Length: 221
Length: 221
DNA sequence: GGTGGCCGTTCAGGCTAATGTCAGGTTTTG
DNA sequence: CAAAACCTGACATTAGCCTGAACGGCCACC
Image 1 (cartoon, rainbow over the protein chains, first blue to last red):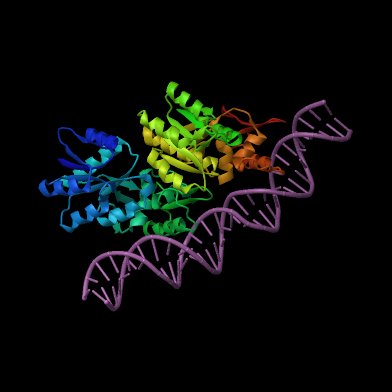
Image 2: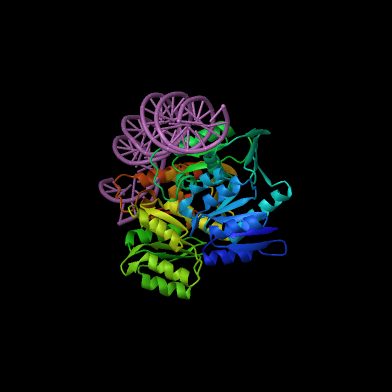
């Protein structure tokens, strides 16, 4: 499997390259969008790891161009913590996944493996919580077998819950998932999204813990 | 897990130290960058809590130096609300998370736990005390196997007890857990909450030490 | 270029349960 | 025995939460 890494930070680039490279994975590492574009034109990559802030432009531009040419190569975005809101846009722009810096290298391996699995056509792992069936790779949810469609932000929130089912998530932790890190939020957006998630996933899916936050109900109803 | 707290405000420093210290977490508290630098050279910390405005310099300088030496110790920055631009800079400088003063102590716990988990990958620990079973991450309690629901303030108090089972906690220490530091309280709120906790956790769960404070009973009843 | 629909965001109104205080009782201490 | 310290039921207040509705931006499609 051939991986293109687009990342201009030296330390991180090295670490990622070393982490991924093995018998099955070859990594080409470039540091500018220019090189990246040249690379995808000459080589058919199986996966692209894409930093967003690069010296000669924004990763989205590259991503959009790539998709515009019809290429469906899976793309994982590597984004800094203060650009979390970008991920919404990123998913819209055609990214398959994203990782927030700083991330565990093992986490990276897991995502890469997941993409590889999907790429080979193997089924991605499915998490069962209550009467929900969640396919993390595909961002697909079934509720009692019936498919449920979530919008980008609904998913962003829900993903927070699914990563550790049953764990109590504070309001600010949830806000960090939706907005640029540390952004002040004045309205009741979280409540609105929780409300919408409940409408789609079931009234009891998410439990309010007054004054503390929310948690995903882990056992069926 | 070993935590370095770099904070020059006495009251806040104490409160944070007390909040974090438990069987699993040892806290070293220093008040200047000088001491902080000396500390990180002699001890391998698992987490650093860093105030930005310190008597002998700015926290960023410390953070940059730390990263320059290749240390990847997770760092959570503690900063005042009005320094928005600092946030971006801080994340670029290599911080892992941010807490904006004034923050809830329970919020601090959550972040520390999250960072710790991110780096160790462990699930949240479950503590057993007497006939109580406490999951700190989930904020869940079982008493003889049966779930117990606590309100935000009840939990805030209880967290103080559970972190140091059997240790005597003074009234003012407990008050610090319920209210922002320094808030004087005139009524008998502590007594009321201790009473409410006893009703939910068992009459003997919390022992009164007349004139001194309270402590959590550690062996079953 | 226009238009319709979807999504994100905010607001207002209504509701429930958590909170803080008090008063009257109980226990401990000197 | 009196005073100090503590306990706890009751209650008014309000913080915190829920949700329908409306608005505006953006994008795809015509």
